[in-house]
Amino acid sequence: MTITAVTPDKSVGFAGVVDGRRRWHGRSYAARGYGQLLMAATLFGLAGSVAKMVLDGGIEPARLTALRCTGAALGLLVVLVAKSPALLRVARRDIPILVVISLCGATLIQWLYFVAIDRLPVGLALLFEFTAPLIVALY
Image (cartoon, rainbow, N blue to C red; front, top):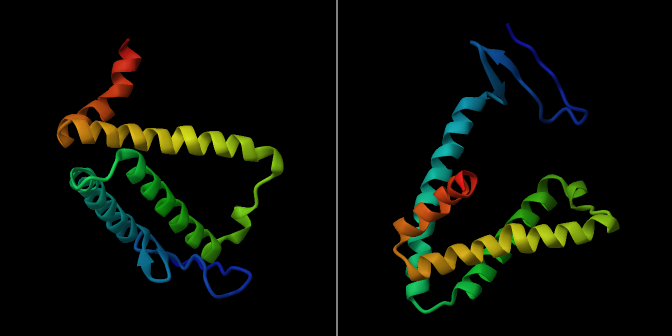
């Protein structure tokens, strides 16, 4: 059974279901998902070690945090400008919330992570990072 839906611009869209798998222009969502999962796991596995090497090279945790957050923001900006520029519109009343989330939710967490990696072995820093929510919940 094949279901075809076309978007208003008739150039992209859901191609249908073939052999029980959803298809997007002939590629299955599963293949795309596995590829993204593999890439995310690889980058996640390398991130701590690369950060440790950079920190051992003499860059301060605050500077590395600024570089990482700025790079991530610029990368996201490029993707949003290319794919969905409407998502860049922010209401004036939402700007303070956006600033607080950016500073506390992203920058502070990255800075503390890099300080931990700078002072501890990477494995121990990661152990603390990922068991901290459990420890707080148990406390």
